[in-house]
Length: 235
Image (cartoon, rainbow, N blue to C red; front, side):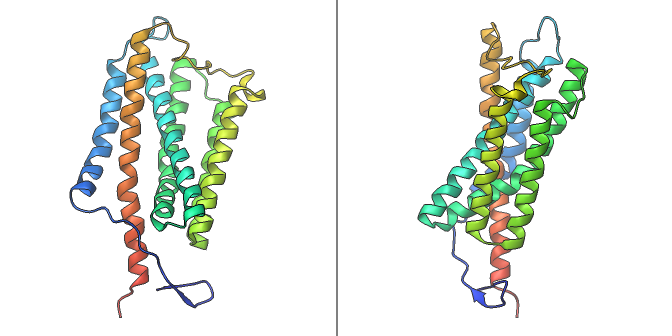
């Protein structure tokens, strides 16, 4: 039982537990696959005009999409929980929401570095940077609220809202007013004439996506373990 905000105990539903080989594989697989995605970017073809620094753009772009896919999966799991009330879905959505903070901090930092090195632009008012910073603040507030209220319904709802904001921002910088005056080229990899660049980009995306998906497992177990410890305090 877990004490509620009013002091009355409430039941803590059980959820799926990762243990043994799956936990060890996930813990080791995340950094290994992340490094592998970087190595793939290093091996990718260079750009004629931008040189080898463009490989940082390859990695950053694919890492960004891997994160966006992960956050979208988290929102879908959260929505599924709100319909089915299956605790495992809520716990997975919560783990992804909590993981979004460090993953997105890395994304913003690498994006700023790439913009400075390649386009000599470090502008916090640039549309993509604005959306990245707004999402980072929103997801940080969502995590704080999830910790404060400590309710699966609240956490799942926050996961959905934060992801909707992210996709709204993506639409704005792609099709809306944010697309005008941006120093960042629109879909540089998709618009590239090089098949090799597209193949490497796909490999980087798949590897980075596998890495962030595996990262969910230890976070999920850490959150689940903490909930269990609160539910069964030592006498």
